[in-house]
Length: 318
Length: 288
Image 1: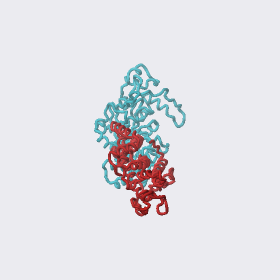
Image 2: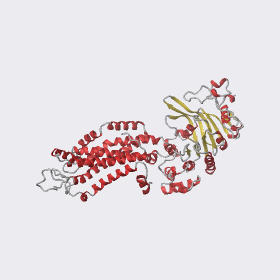
Image 3: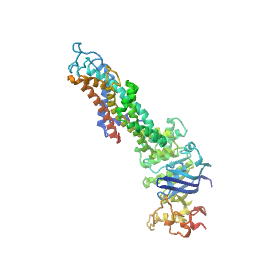
Image 4: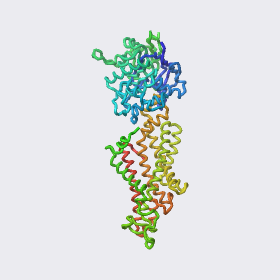
């Protein structure tokens, strides 16, 4: 299995006035090429920070403090900034959460897509770049003549399509989508997700979806990584995880999702996520875990391989 | 690129601040016309003895030939005001444009990159800003020596920090916006982000500050002229005429000071209205 990105022991910390926040804590995993991988977790679990770390765009006071991110054989963390910038938008792209504010309000959408071609040296001619932008728009299902529209003239779904068009304009091998549909209604959400899947096949990309919606992740992904308190607690093929969650947190998450027929009671997980400036000793989930036992509040669980999954829980350490 | 109709729409469209903006622009336009067509509008030259030499020893009140009266040397006050518009507009435009050309790029870079450079620039600008404008302009102008261009340069020193502070503040805000983050994620270099994303989004602020700086520049220019730091008498300049007129104000010659005073106020009002109108339109708060 060839991987497009491999994370090795990646930690991202925010150095705030009130202490060091371990937003991403020693994450290790492989993203296979051509697959659709979702990172799920609640707010503050570190999934967005992890996505920004892949582009080396973690905003200050955050910093990637350790680890390796191997993308197509290169360690991104040791590349010079100039080289990293060339990769952004060309080999690794990102689509953000809020399409309403992710486009520059004072420039036409066509120009904003055309910029990608010009800044990455595909062409120096604005006319030519606008022609390519028109094709990119058509690829995401927007009529080409909308190049002359300003963002405010488009709907939320259309704006997200424009942003996707800019992100995939140079056929990147990895597209990171950070909650791309949170600000959109369900119908538009489904269409945008369809578009992502189509583009993935057409351009042979890998997609990383960041979401808190485990149902959405289950429906669309090949693999799921469940994050809690900066750790990936479980990672594996989607069917296995949904049918038989190994980690108690994953189980709790699945039991918290409502089902359409209302036959199942929503359980929820008692308690609150921990303060990441001062995480609990041992397993970060142990204070809320229904199955905690002896070692949980003392030793931090290592990653364990169970079939084709990895899980970080003492239930499986021996 | 903005189209012609887009620009006219921006200025004349039914939006907040339209009345202020149009009134202000009309006033400024009127003075620009005076300056450009001075030889045709002014009945006399600025230093032409326009009365018979028997009357020339004392200022004459307004009459049919001299609608704003004459000075003690027999110069026509109205003609001097018309010709003086040229100097005033030159100094004001030069200083506002120069301070914008310096303050805007500095504010842009300082706000965008932050760090040590930002702290140093901010401290320098704040210390300039701490001086009262007219005192600083007078000091710089007297060092540089009297001339319209030097007056413009010394006024620029006063307004660079105004542009700097407003632009820097806006840049800090725009810099945090998601579209800048998205542009970074697309691998754009910082110069691209500054020129194509940050600058256009702070442009309305720049216009408003331009209006405010120009307003202030008119009053301060009049001050510099009053102290003889722009042109030397008998070249026409409103501020200078004001001071010369003061000499025979006690002889009852009110017209030689009143009319230059009115035009100074009127032109300042014009720029102030434009600044206010733009501020209202783009909802920009200006702390001065």
